[in-house]
Image 1: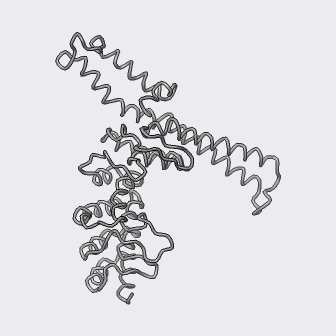
Image 2: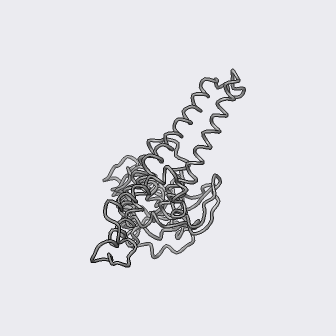
Image 3: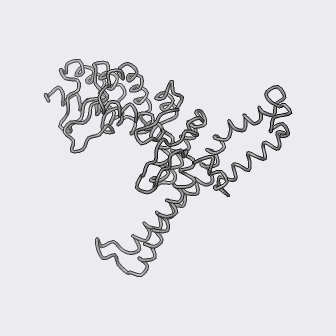
Length: 337
């Protein structure tokens, strides 16, 4: 790495546009690695310097390069995946990368390259905005985007956020964004798991939907965590001092109580907001199909079983189905699993 390389990295970090352009034109290896083992494009993403990223991509900088000589490397470390992980603050950068990807993805032929391409829609839903997800899945309309574990993008996100999110506000914000995507592409909500998959805390069952995972598994895991937290909390009440680390009982008890409250808020959000809305979106095409079946010009013949139904009756049926998934989920389990 020469002095020009070092200067370029510094110019990108400081958003010095004129200096960056001059140095990009001078540099011999556009994919050089800094002392931090990152490329200039990696630095541009970290600093959200879209202008520098445009210059680098025009010079042929690669989005699929891994940081050099890191102790642990997988496809999530490449520049493309970093851009997505940076979240909605990097939407412009993400859209730039997706546009560039269209012209280079045919050259991404290695095993790691294919893993990156497979993971892009999943990361777009988990970390970014509806616009980025829609751009990343143009042509597929969000369907058929399974990873090597047999999970589609919706299920991947529901699992990651539903099980592991600790901040209820961030959890709700992420899943509210996800629902914007699902409302646009409702077909993905009915896509089921392709194979049984054990994931530490639970066993994903083949044929189940993302909603079934939330209703029958995720909430149970969250409630189990709270029971464990309460056992720990009760045990602490019997002691005056935590023996190791010098942490006071009061401080540690407050932390555990906060974990219990946050966990309960996530469960409440899932119960009261996400699950009913997701189930409503899933039922919508069934509701339309049943209404069409009762229409005199579309199927309302004497032999049609739905011929006796009117709009009010159909509305009542589907309102009860929406309530069932919360009040009596066993009644609709056969539809979701």
